[in-house]
Length: 208
Image 1 (cartoon, one colour):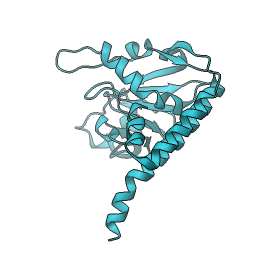
Image 2 (cartoon, rainbow, N blue to C red):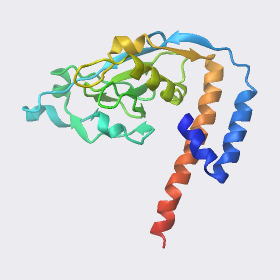
Image 3 (cartoon, rainbow, N blue to C red):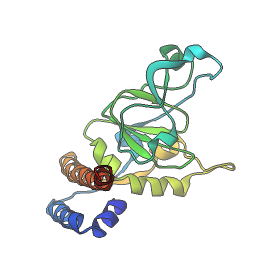
Image 4 (cartoon, rainbow, N blue to C red):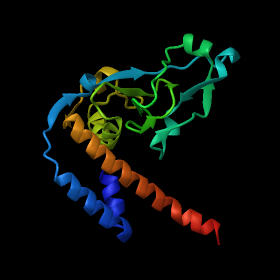
């Protein structure tokens, strides 16, 4: 949310959009309630099939690594894929599309993407599988706050890491489901606009 604000402030075309969004958000009668992530979502870790067994790899199940989370809102297809046997022989779990916000728990805590197709992850994730009455895009939009809190309690001697239990105990402010939907809608539109604007220079360059 902070990053979006800075981008809009530095661009005259997007600045007006940010002001309109803030104005509309300000008209809502927010009723915020502190909730633990574990109350509104299941926190699911990942796993890695043995790399020594080729029967576990090159299947049709998407399997994400943290490096794939750079700069994307939606996870629509992984670089590596595993087989059903690889899934069964590891601690990887199938995560549901549309309700899962992937969340990296090590090697860069707090990279997030909304899962668009059912998939699994390696152990570098503690993914947030949303329960009923919670908007996934709202949780994604709260990413900077969740990341900051997660980094504040992460531990580890070699590298910082946050466990599923620790992430589940994090508290965030939650409005009603109706207000979540409205907030999510506005920020999704703003994200769409920013993405379109960021692609524009490359498009113009390619047409020269």
